[in-house]
Amino acid sequence: MSFYLPLISLHYKSIEITETITALWSGCGEIVRCCLDGNACVIKAISVPDHINHPRISQTEFAINRKRHSYEVEFHWYQQYAPHLPAQARALNCYNTLEHQQQKVLVFADFSAAGFTNAQMDHQHIAAILKWLGYFHAFHFQVKPDGLWQQGSYWHLATRPDEYEKMADSAIKHHAYNIDKTLRACQYQTLIHGDAKLANFAVNSATMEVLGYDFQYVGAGIGVVDVMYFLGSCLNEQQLEDMADDYLADYFQHFSNAMQTFGNSDYSATVINEWQKLWPLAWADFYRFLMGWSPEHAKVNTYMRKQYQITKINFGSKLE
Picture 1: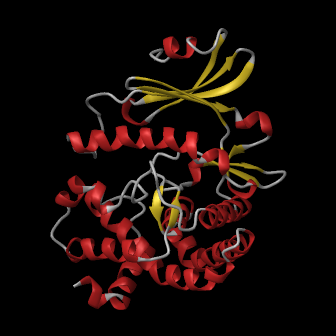
Picture 2: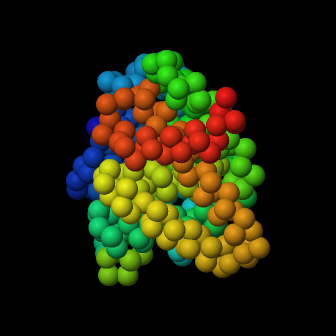
């Protein structure tokens, strides 16, 4: 692909593309390492096609518009929100945002030049990212999602009508709307990353600093939704059974410390109590998505099903 070169050339005199890192999801662009006017950069070049080829996504205009809007949200995030992040919850440094019609280019610092590498499935990296999430959520506590998703994450019910229709008739389908309603009804909202998988973080193993990136689904939500998705991205079924509670406790400790740092300590215990109760619902909601998107997915495991059973026990009257 080179669709983005004319746009970049309007802003940079010297352009050297050195490596294609990866293609974006289903032909929506690519990420390349480059040198712009002598500076090492990474470019995320975006152009969403009219038709998306994906084996599990219904080719509806709704689905394509969801993807297109996700890049608009990310563009806005880096312009308006990322510059204000605290040191404990930094994002990948965005040098420039370029746009022309449906084409968008985000110009980032190359994090590898600063000693960062892609996050790995080891305890130290997982612990560091949980701290990042705690501070990210505390910093954005009760912040309104202006220009972002009014409900963060890519799998929430309102943004997945196609997958909901594909679900087999089942208890989880019957409970879907009330699970979603209960999560949204929590009065203690923050901004969530919305796609907080291991692959969307970089860690400096010498300092344990963390950078987050890929903010296409950032928006309003409760912190444990990000924690659920993150732990599900890096722990297998047995690890979730053995370690999820401890990791969740670690996250809440970081969140509490961060709430004190940002002047909201009076709310901390109450928020943690409410979000702790909603932990099983966060899993049940993602379970609902997977049962419509890919029922045989490896993430559908005993731990996830157990959280759904806990949801039915603890919130039975609200689900009917």
